[in-house]
Length: 418
Ligand code: EPZ
Image 1 (cartoon, rainbow, N blue to C red):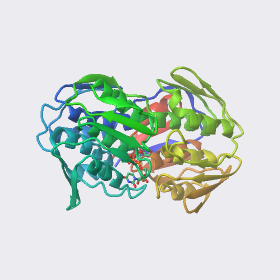
Image 2: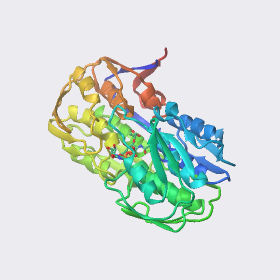
Image 3: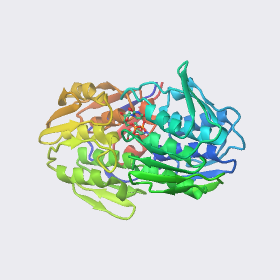
């Protein structure tokens, strides 16, 4: 299995282009199931999860043609089998995003329950409740969701708690339902808005994406279109923190600053200077770093997907910071590994108390999930000596060419294969 060797002590400098958002590309690919015409997607990140979903869609009857490193043409003349098998769903729970489109297109879906993962239980009960409200008959057996619906009918659906892929699944299902659907307490993430933009370009009637209430007027069919996926705000936040933790000066290109307001606000409080342009961000040297508490929240709050990276930054900031994770119940898997590198972190329920600054020393560490592994790379950049990050396949799921991008900024990082 690949490992990354990171040697700390270099202040990053230069500029880096941010890739398209994985969490926007995945629902966009699933949306291609909703029409028999071609959907062309641009700015799709070259990451493992995209290739995994392309394979799953291929099994369902979608032809997924790669037109370039970041460009795909998807076409589903007909759904040959409406089944997302356990072997694929267990590896990528975003596969559940085919559930809504399959039901809307064919009236049938058999999707493996995702099961838990490193960061939490990850149930999809809210997805299923919403589909039942649209008239689907849902049975759970042998670890699979068996769903049937002659014709989905529009309904009023209120999500008990915010769910990003739940909102996306229901929005897609409702585009072909009979009548109007209203989603209340919907997720407001930019990735939800991007999906709504794509669906509208395909002929869907959607209002309110990006707010708590989304209204979808069902139409008989959708048509093909071209769509450019939004930039990845989590990748952008990861590089900002990498620059901050190494005391560097870095420019991010091809980003959407409007998606990072909560991150800018927090980094400003930590003492970092940020310049923001139309599609670029420059972060300067913010020494000394000041500790500042964090509570993760659904968008537009500070994203849970940057919590681990922010925690590493707080190990280098003067003072005590309290980091509270409100979205996932087990998203502190990076803490034991950071402690082994010298971090002073105490856990109390869903809050981590970080004392800083503490010098970090390089170590052999193991990645547990996508964003925790990114935080271990950042820790390696700040540590004295050499860090070997094991199980780098977690990183490859959501970061395109991480060693090339960080290497181009001056980081001493290389992939050890085998
Ligand atoms: C999406 O996951 C993202 N994945 C996650 O990014 C991200 O961390 C998460 O949203 C929160 O922003 C994709 O978009 C592919 P949720 P999702 O449904 O939709 C609970 C990454 O690193 N819940 O908003 O699965 C759930 O267990 C990944 O790129 C239910 O209880 O997250 C969690 O505690 C990690 N029942 C909370 O709600 C449900 O039916 C939020 O989950 C659905 C969710």
